[in-house]
Image (cartoon, rainbow, N blue to C red; front, side, top):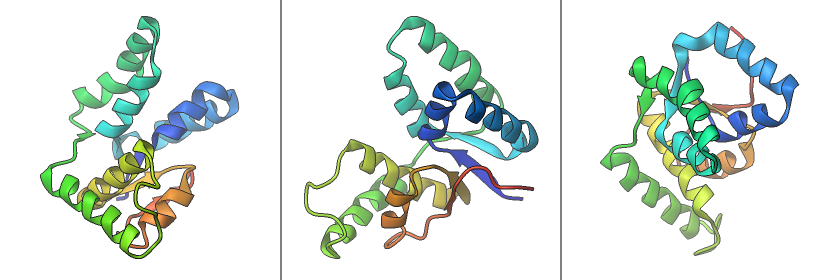
Length: 148
């Protein structure tokens, strides 16, 4: 059975597009036992929740249900270490320039490495970054929404 992590961009898009939100709800209702929440996604969503009401909604609707079920992925030391190695290899191969990447890319690499360790497929609209990462780290990712 395939297990999934939803990238931050999917949650953000769902807040901006009701049609996409409907597709997200439909996917999660069909695949909920197979969906996990990643600590990096929680961090990125929390950064965007600048008002107290948004933070409460994030906690109630996204974070707490995964915490209760014990389905939160937290990167360990090996993932942190490997993420640095992946970035160094991408620079060495001239896929990236030294310092030519931001915090978001660092988060994507850590997300990719830790999901690979856990056997999770990342669902994302950000395939360009994961294409780059996969030149060094064989990460599994897909556009939303895979079918049963």
